[in-house]
Length: 101
Image: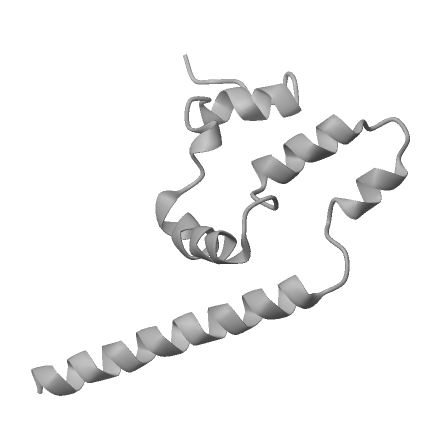
């Protein structure tokens, strides 16, 4: 019974990785990238676009981007952990959040 469950979990894992790889490759095959619209704006410098490409990992090779896509849900978004949620909401809508006390 344990062997059956292990085999089913293994097949499920292979299926999940296969589907995610297929979707990743389809999205990579799409023409352009989401930063291509910024290149048309004359107010945005090429250094800013280069920095955004590095921030989102678009300057990395495809296998590294796929590995990052696979691991990102397990790593979490560490960019905003130092900011409390109430402060973030207060920043977005001043006066809307009143902390207790």
